Structures are given as structure tokens and as C-alpha cells.
Amino acid sequence: MSQQLERLLPILSTIPGVNIPITILQGVYIAASQRKIEQLEGALQYEVGLLNQKIMAGKLVLDSEYVKSESFTANVMQAVRAAEIAETNHKLHFIARALAGCSLSFPRPQPDKFQTMRMIEGLSDRELRVFVESFQLLDPIDPYQDLIPNDSQVSVAGLSRQECVASLLGLEQLGLLSKETLTDKGGEWVDTPYQAGPGFAWKLTALARQVATLSRVGVEDV
Image 1 (cartoon, rainbow, N blue to C red):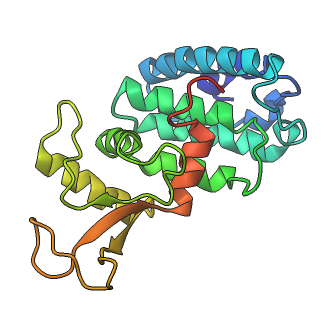
Image 2: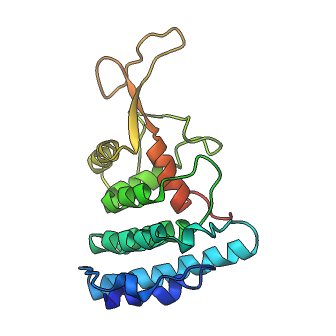
Image 3: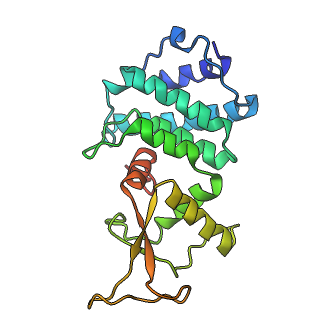
């Protein structure tokens, strides 16, 4: 059995109903370094502790059946695999928060937790930072209907304009952003300062909604 996975079990077992049998993890090989596992362990301890407090306060709802299922165990192994290639501690904390979110019940549309964890694994640190920052530019009431025009200055500390643009393109490739053509009220094309011809804007997709829901992006008090 992977000792790296074994050390995460006591933390996960503090979530009501979670009881991952040790036998399931026998023979599982994880290539993540000891340091990354320790960082993930610390992040998970924090996120699970916070989650349990909010469940007890009635701010979050536990998915009692899901946490007992093999699907939740698969989420745990997905999270550790994602930690193997995480570039920064920030990404590891995001993985931990998403894994903790896998134990929750959400109103419809319910996120596909396995698919969402797979998307999170594929996010680079830069793409993750730009993804989170994009929510600061969108309507907080309904960010999924709002648009970020291509000429908007998406700014992330430590990243150049070119790095931000490359990250937006990467998020599109992952299916988290889509390009929407901009038109005025009369239906005419709207040109932007950065390109000739029809302008476009970035819009969050249904996959982006799943990632944000599971990781509670932009939600600090619920």
C-alpha cells in the first residue's frame, strides 16, 4: 500500500461517513514526492477542518452516500495524482479544496466530480491563477452569463500580458473558456483594438462552473 496515501486517510476520516478501507489502496503506486505529499497533507487538513465547521454550522451539505462510495475513493487517488505534477503550493491548496468539495452535495446541476478533478489535474499554475482572477472581472451575481472582452486587461501579479493571454488560450483548450463573438445592438460586428474584424470575448463554460463549484472559487463565507 502507498504510505503516501495512507497518511491522508486520518484526515479524510474526519469527514462524517468517510471510511476508505486500507485494502482498497494496497498496490496503489503514487509518484508524488514526500515533500508534495506533506504539503498536500497540510492543505487537506486545513480545508477539511474548514469544511467540517461549515457542515456543522449548516452552511454546507454533506453528500452522505457519495463519501461512502468507491467514486469518492477514486477522487482521492485523482487528487494525489494531480499533486504529482502540481507546480506550486497554491495549486496543491486548490487540489485539497476541490477534494474536500467532492464530499459535498450541490443543488442541480450537480457537478461531475470525477470529470472535474480530471480538469483540475490538467490546470497549470498559471492557468489556475488566471482562471481564479477572471472571476474578479465578471458579474458576481451571475459570472457565467457575463463576458470578458478580448481587449480587457486581465492582470495577475507576476504574470506578463503575454503570459496571461497564453493562459486564457490554455483555459480555452481545456474547455473552461469559450470565445463569443461580440456584436452591437444592431447585430453589427464590434472591432476590438487588439484585432481586425469581428471582436470576441471570453465566457466561462459549463466545465468552468463545475470547477468553480467544487473548489468554491470566490466563495469565502458559505
